[in-house]
Length: 157
Image (cartoon, rainbow, N blue to C red; front, side):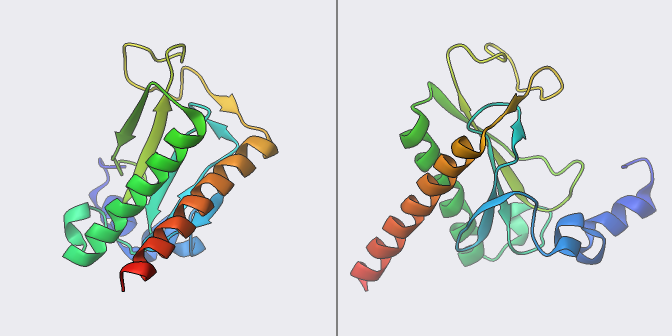
């Protein structure tokens, strides 16, 4: 994609962005304040979730300070919800946008026996198909964490 500068420039624009053209990412499991949480049934690791910005920007620094804060709060909310639900050994975060230049963060719970121990996550090497029940548990964990965060915010006001 980068080798064709015109195609890349078009894809970087809101009108050329596949997420913006659809109006949201695929496989949304939760709508948060500044983002969507997306969890496809096939994923590199069982607890994988992508946190996708609602605003079309390519880089996080393109967000205003308040929008940037809200986006990263959403990422942390999702990571904590997944950690509480799945008890991984470690949480990993990846931010690329090399294929879809729309701000999103890949959140990966890592496990002592996952297929990528000691190296980077390579979805071409392994993937998991999650059941509807597993995706529902992820959805509920994120939704419940979001509701708790909203209650905390409203009690501070």
